[in-house]
Image (cartoon, rainbow, N blue to C red; front, top):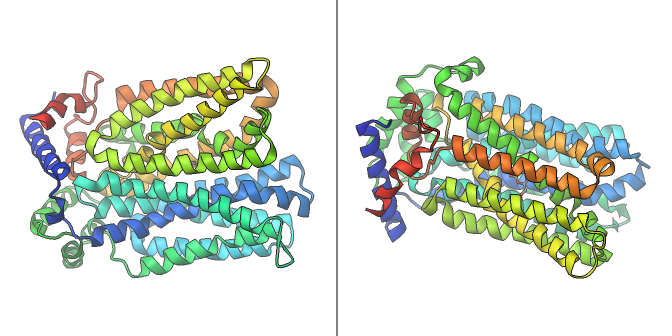
Length: 494
Ligand code: BGC
């Protein structure tokens, strides 16, 4: 059961949210908050770009180096293995050196690695540089959301946090366009070299942009640098009461000493650990990257020509971007849970239809279009739910002391599950066919729905410190297995 004080705190926060929706948030924060979030979100652009570029570049790399299927998989997965390592060490490094410095270091590694990939004399070097770039990608996947959530005011933290996912989807789209521009050769040099080296451009923008940004105020407080934190807060909050926010951060910071990996296993943290890891794995095993990587192949199978398949793939990329924008507009109004449940429910249904499309003997005519439609709707449902909400929530639900480390753990599971899907999906299709393979993904989506329904709390409109209190008071997820949301949601309408 929820305590009286927790209830009144939530009511206050929700009333504040109603005011925001009605449109007076300008008093709370300055526009600089948007600048910080937009630049920190470029971390997502780096990793979206890498996801998108390799599928195009691979077609030409395999010709240049005469790669076997196995070596192609190694070239693709090099980044995923590196990303697992980057996420594993990145969380701790973010807690130690700060969000800003780590981002700059990550961008530098991505910059150098991209040039290295472009210049690789053989496949060994290429795989080596992909691994190095992967480390930067893993770091970027956690430090971006962390930096954003720690500078954002609660009332728009969701929207700002989603900028990272928007940047990921824009990165994927940018990569499709860059692949198109440089293929097959450019200035007499194989196009794939330009494509991979192009990653240095967004990396440079991120590194230089971040150089001019302030550190996260919450991290500064954690390091005892209160004056600097106050300075930063006065730049990103307008008329809001800075001292009140400082007190709130300090209060949480004082009852805690430095945390480490072992602390994550403390019983009171388990609900948050489970949510982070659960969402991480479900985001991948529900199959999004099978579509991102294999959309052209699937489209060809259902009877579209080469050009139509490429147009269809770009269409998938555009839908992914647009629906992420819709999610940004909705997340702080309707909350994380409704987005997740509607989105994952929709994904489940669409995978069912997609599988059915392949199950039917003839995929021509109307069935082909139903299949294409279900694929696009699947991506649309993903883009308003598991895509952005996972990265947002892992930056919200953990206590300050171990936030970086805990986010790293969730991210490692995410990259690990990504690797697993990348390495098994094609052989799964070969063994049991497309229909069953997509239905298996559909079953994973259904499991994700059940998990979200029973385990994932609502974090809308609460400060990070309030979320932490719910963990301490065991009200993070309702004890009856219901989310706390349903209990205080009616207050919003009061
Ligand atoms: C996931 C990626 C995925 C992308 C698609 C991200 O949130 O982590 O694996 O490729 O969304 O938009």
